[in-house]
Image (cartoon, rainbow, N blue to C red; front, side, top):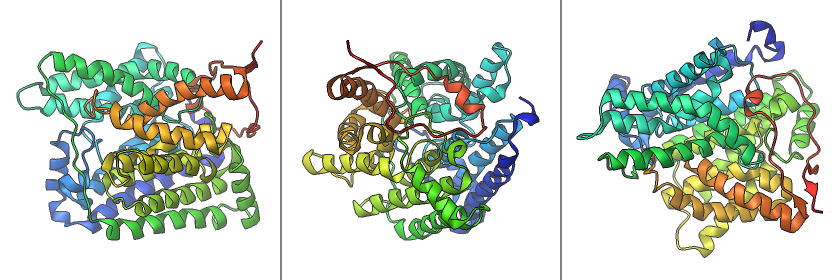
Length: 451
């Protein structure tokens, strides 16, 4: 992929992403003692990272944000040097990498998986840029690398690196397949693919003598520190979308209103559909929704929940908006009312945020189905993490995929009386294009009628 394929209107985005990474680094230095940053980063690198491992608790907010900034810098460098054109999926990757580097990914354990994806590209004699976003997202399994490399009494550094390379090699082909199976109803497609790999990997290493366990390292008491900073960041994005994108305010707002009418069914690349202004507004609004929801249910702003909010913000350029995420979040809230767990539980707080992976069900079929999807997801996700011992950071993506695979054909067959068909888009094509596209009809149903 040469530079001529990069659309000129997006050339400024990589410097902006670079500025975002630098902002994280500066925030990390300001929130802690810079002299203790290296010690905090060392703790992060030498900690087994299975869910839930909050780097804010492990090393403090400063080192956690510095790690996030470093991982984001690495991600921006890989995407830009690989000549990846900026589109909605690029924002998704940066949101995931910066968010999950607050609880599970670090600037060391991601490299074996990235190297494995590079080897896959070389084995197919194709440019690494075609698969680089998949490799970055596949670092959801970075805890596997850390566990094998660091575990006392089992595993070695060499074995951890080797397993990471194998994971990175497998993920491009597997994620391309799982994308079609879910029919665009689960936005965290790579999370579902990583869950399948973890379901094989964890029992395999356990049968060899390992004993991985789920962790619950969860920081509390940082709301006053994080809430103002996150609110200012989100409001700044909204302001930028309204006033700094060289469009009249009315046009930016009209674009956002059109964006709200979409279903969010993947692929929904809002950057290509609507441009920067509506996407920035959508990103800021969704971030405020996520933060408000956590605070209103008595949750905590820490590494995992801020990571979840940043993930929502990243997917605000690829399928999520206020209209389709609120019903799904309401479904989790309903689950907290009628089921035997509390919305203040750490795993449930994450479910409140990451359940928005099922936003397309709400957008495509209507808000009652979105509530149903969130309600089901809130229970399923509490049990899918245990069999894989927290080794898949995108556990909500895996459980969301299970819910989508069951719920989608059921709704189609029972409520719509149409024949379910597998999605035929190529997942990898989504990563390579940046030309403008026309938003699809949100009410369009491509399935065939029964009979």
